[in-house]
Amino acid sequence: MQESGRAPADDTGINERIARRVRDLRMLRGYTLDALAARSGVSRSMISLIERASASPTAVVLDKLAAGLGVSLAALFAGDRDDAPAQPLVRRAQQAEWRDPASGYVRRNLSPPGWPSPIQLVEVDFPAGARVAYDSGGRESALHQQVWVVSGRVDITFGEQRHELHEGDCLAMRVDQPLVFSNPSSHAARYVVAICDAPAAVGARSVSSIQGRQAQEPV
Image (cartoon, rainbow, N blue to C red; front, side, top):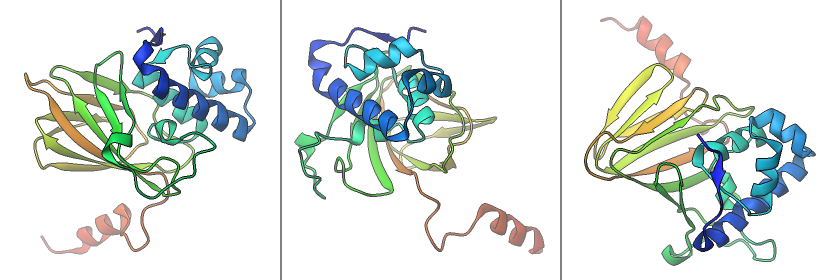
């Protein structure tokens, strides 16, 4: 798979946003291009092209960079211009859209850009026959997400487990294993992803405590 193609003219705005975010996050963490390349598995030359908005990277490549930077994929789309103050409200027309050049899926960041929150919402239009395999695995910080299918069918393979989701179904997971999204149907699907890059909400019961209680309950 190619890491990228040249950036189409109509992708200039979103590619510039991604470029700023990758560069800013890398510098904030004190990583050189070589260091980020080693952490992410993305070549130094490709990172340089991305930071100059001179390439249109795939979702898989961006996910590897996000993992190397210790953030979610959605975080790479979240930033706005430095001189634009963050606002708690973003209108539909202002929500950034991006098309994955490999799969053709279109993602739209629903959350207000730059607003400080552990939760990010993303909507994805997933074409018929599309498949995206994220193999970056675990991150240094806990990353939880839930996928809610608005329409159509989405198959999700998480580690060794495969789930077939239809309209209205919702799947929760901690993103610490390879993750594959696919749409084997002949119709496009749409789903919303809620991402939390902080520990699970206060008051939520841990998986281990739930499993322990279930083991004590009579069958």
